[in-house]
Image (cartoon, rainbow, N blue to C red):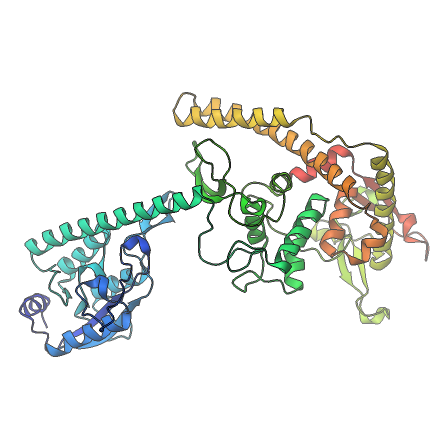
Amino acid sequence: MADDDLLTRAQWGNLTGQNWAVLARLSTDESDGEAAEDVPEHGRRAPLTGRDIKSTEEQDRDGRKFVEERGGRVVHTYFEPDTSAWRKRRVREADGRIVYRVVRPIFEGALEDLRSGQAPNGERLDGLIVYDIDRLTRDPRHLEDAIDVVERSRRPILDITGSLDLLTENGRAVARLVVTMSNKQSADTARRVRRKHRALEREGIPTGGARPFGWNDDKRTLHPDESKHIRKAVERILGGAPFRAIPLEWNEAGVMTPRGNKWTPSKVKEMFRNPRLCGYRSRKVWQTNPVTGGEMQRWEIVHDDDGHPVVGQWDRIVTVEEWRALVDVIGESMGPGDGHNSRKYLGTGTLRCDKNECGAALRVVKAPKSANKPEGFFYYACADKGQGGCAGTKIPGPETDEAIKELVFAKWEEEAARREAAAVPQEWSGESDLARVREDIEEAKEARERRIISKEQYFSLLQRSTAEERRLQRERNQWFKRRYASQGEPVNLREDWDGLTIVEKRSHVEQTLTAVLVAPAVGRRKPVQTRLTPLFRTEDDIQDSEED
């Protein structure tokens, strides 16, 4: 069948011998302006437009009936459930640029199939049927894509109601006007919805879909178990425990997200960064770098007309001071280092070969069966020369771990005595300095956005200010940890050690030791302690490692 014949016969309503596909889209997006109306008590009213179609199955049935009554055959249906034809999403282009586009992969796939003339099941495809133009698109870009397919592939796109005509110049002009008005209608509805949400935010009223972790389904009262998990995790992080231990422990204990999924480090950090924890109303915003144009998402506290934080209508889990200190520790936004350490042995990454100043990190080697060692016995050994080592050092793993543990205990107890002797001030003296530096950073960003200063000036100011901010944050974190620890029961690391995860144990090792040098064995069965030379971290080393 000639392509021009397809268009001519479609205009006359003769689809005999043709293969068609149905596109059925349903949007529950409030911004589409398609909210369902109440059904009259006396019965169901007949649908008048695409907005009245409440199921993709109904659209599919009507589309099939339309095609079959005119002699055609439906060979495939493209279902688009809960798909907005208007709402734009953030998309990264191939060149790295961030743009906002309506994302409809099924719709785009249907156009591509129509362009090639082949349905997903391999059958010939001659045309596409929709209920009306509103079901096809509300986005001018997508309308132009559809028009391009009809004009170039000479395969028709029809609707049931007769409101869509892409086969003639006049019809295409009308379609452009209709889509433009539909797009404006969606934008008007979205504006009303945003205004409604802003009003809810100002009143501190909880909104959204799934309940937040830590609260019950009403989003106001605390979930007894989940809120305890959060409190305990915050206390441990502020007390010096590594963040990466939290998601591991929760997953091992069977603590799931509200949607029943396992926790990842990024999910836990996103939850901890949310001001909701301390009772503040918040919203997510995208922040654009004024120089690179890159974007990152972060939580923003909602403020009232007087500039005060809006307190939400729900129970808080932690205090504002605890939440701010927590965000200082874990960072305000996702960045490098948000992953987790997968090491499973206490000494990996810390033990170094000391033969002829080799310096290579020792790796774990399982004992062969011929060694007649207990199951799971292992050694720490230097890699061979082909892998950057010298293969000249090997030391029993379990005994070395015990020696490392005793080094950590000794250093901890020494530091604990010093901490107890030093009183922790109730107020941190650098709060005003930190506020001033952050104000300088914001002023520099604003100046760059307004092109008052050059890139070079901006980066110079930013480098100095952010370095000062990190230094002050480290001091604040150290003060808060000392103050927090002084208010609770003293930690006895020796007694608590067996109850810690390997991640927490590794964290204590890394905070205590820069490295442990391992000398080659001399003689037989000498204690492993005689072969170890510990290099303890200084206070500056500890602060630098926390920054990293």
